[in-house]
Length: 178
Ligand SMILES: Nc1ccn([C@H]2C[C@H](O)[C@@H](COP(=O)(O)OP(=O)(O)OP(=O)(O)O)O2)c(=O)n1
Image (cartoon, rainbow, N blue to C red; front, side, top):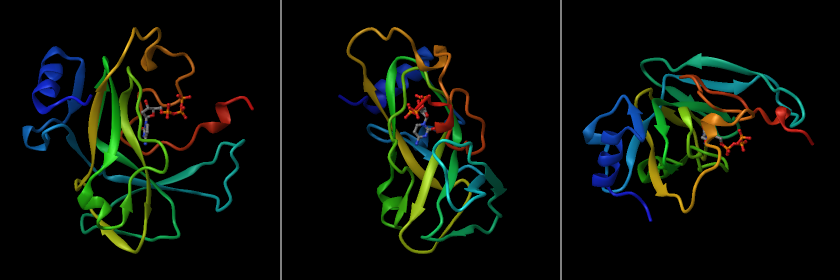
């Protein structure tokens, strides 16, 4: 089951879903449109190492847009800060974004109950494409959860991406023990 527009509105009123900034126009029949924040980032090194802290270079998208290229992997961020306290939020692309050859996540679309923060986007493109800050880029959908959650994401000690700021956040895989 996915929450409908009226159910998303009810949860916003209850405070179990928070979306800031919020605009009623962005609420679809069963999703909420999120927008590209003003910062993008790329990794400093060409060869990444899953055991190491790979650092990123953050830069601002100029007012007249920024061209993304297929051979470069970008991290982006949603303009929206969200909190989801009782449902599982999923970040999906928009069809209009997909039709421009833009993927907004590499493998992780699922969020966690209790996630609070801006969403980091894992962006790759099929052909060069100019993007703009504030453009609609994805949509959040919400699934009800079966059963009690023992520990919500924002209560977990080792949650790596809790409270993400309005800038892209690099992989914290290096914090995993393996
Ligand atoms: N494209 C995405 C997908 C998820 N998230 C956020 C919402 C999730 O609640 C949080 C953690 O996502 P995962 O559980 O997939 O991440 P990890 O398992 O790598 O991290 P952790 O060990 O902290 O759970 O990151 C994000 O910012 N951007």
